[in-house]
Length: 42
Image 1 (tube, rainbow, N blue to C red):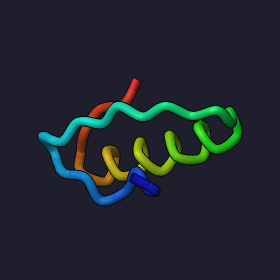
Image 2: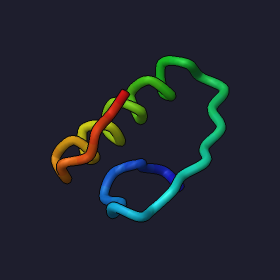
Image 3: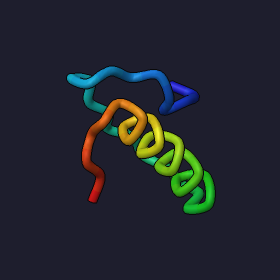
């Protein structure tokens, strides 16, 4: 997988990264998608 965006309410991801900057960027996009779907993020 190259992108963490576009997943639905019941989708799950397990992703490993060597680069902390890329991890944070993908995490922000993933959490933003969840918030847009009305999910809680903490």
